[in-house]
Image (cartoon, rainbow, N blue to C red):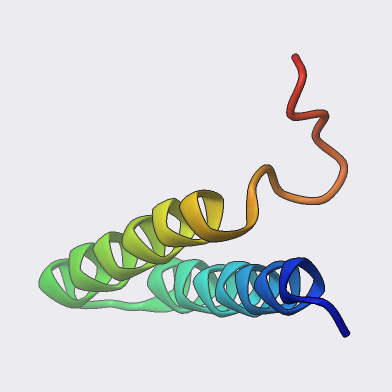
Length: 62
């Protein structure tokens, strides 16, 4: 596995965790908890974009 593959895998894992956090935020009844979960998800997505490029299915050249 190359460094690029490892980076992409790590970025994909971050995106999956961010999705789980977003899902949990949708079901959270406490507004503060919801906002915290959404903030964590946004942070992870941003990190994954910086680390692994565009998410799957998106053309980075667009």
